[in-house]
Length: 157
Picture 1: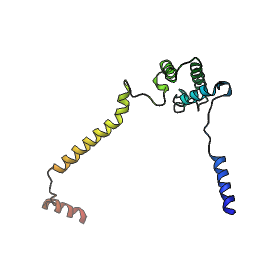
Picture 2 (picture 1 turned 90 degrees about the vertical axis):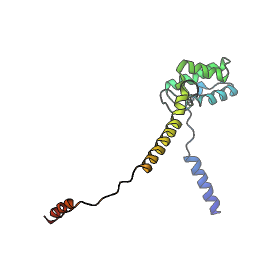
Picture 3 (picture 1 turned 30 degrees about the horizontal axis):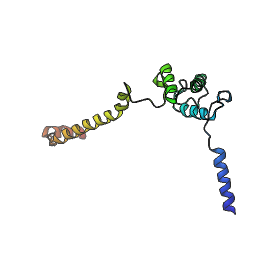
Picture 4 (picture 1 turned 60 degrees about the vertical axis):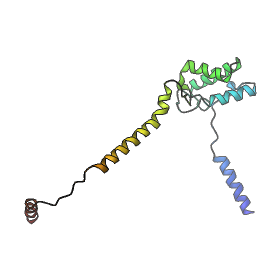
């Protein structure tokens, strides 16, 4: 019985203290058609708030995010497909508005830069290590007689 009470208490604590996703969609923005509203919510997860930068417009309370949510819903109500609505917003605000930018155009360089730099670093490291292993070994010579005398004089003082 104690185990059951402890399990229920843990479940209640986890439920109470687990943060729920904070959605900033206001009641006056919600569409009457549940299917359109579900589409709008799904699309807004992929749109960046241009003020908050790393939040979707669904999570942001910024005025610009609200404007984007309203614009997206207006486009869906007007009959745009998901793709058309996203293309309209990207055309208006630029590709930066996408949380996951495309890999076309100049963006391919950004997507490829990380792996290319890693590959370049590995090639440089291989050549460096090879060069070090092929370098002639210099034998360490002891102190010359003159250096030994000088050292002895220093130590005696």
